[in-house]
Length: 300
Image (cartoon, rainbow, N blue to C red; front, side, top):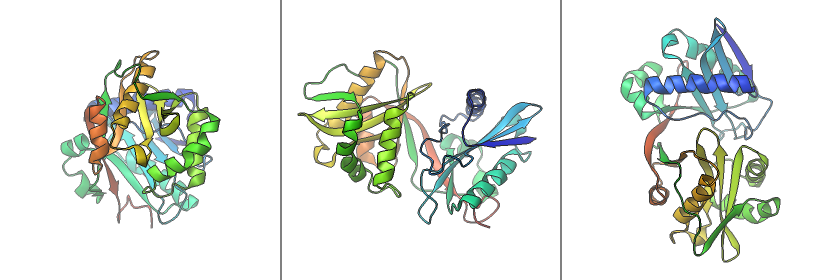
């Protein structure tokens, strides 16, 4: 077995990674896709992708999503996919050992492993065997069918994000995500600017009475994935969130024919209600696992 580690994936590697992920999802009944870019990682030169190969064929993939700078509050998200025929043969362990060295060298102190309810249900001994601990808060993955949305609204308008919008949106963005560790002004500006300039992302601003009151980015891939979505605090609980989402879906449906997806924390019932009102339905439930001790722990 050979492991290749790289900060970015080539087109061929991306295609191979996607095929491997789809194969593991089909076997496990899962749906969560890891992020296959490193645009938001704190160090874009740090290896974020680890591909295991046997006989020239990819058999395993580990990804690191490290948008927080190393420190006591920074958390790195780790996703691991191994083809069913190669499980329980040390592939995941080898991938983690390679990634662990990279994270330790970078000074990272904490990581979490992403998994899904369907996988845990079909592998009831997994947590005990790995000594991993499940976070009580999960993420609910939601989906809406292609063609959803509406073309117009009587009070809201939705337009693409421009460079002149960023300074206006910054304080609203920071207020909306104030509870998330590491979201300072520089990071918020980077998120907005990267999304604005990435050809594979559509960024939208929601206007009410000529004023920007919301924002969302949409990753354009095999499906349209909404992230960074918010409505400014003073404009919440007025139905604007679901209408904003429906307008974005309407605009995207005019040129694309992809399903829509997004994630919401299980302890955020208000946002969950907004998304259901916009036409989304539950698809999966993701959990984050930590390793206080044992071979999956980041610290020695």
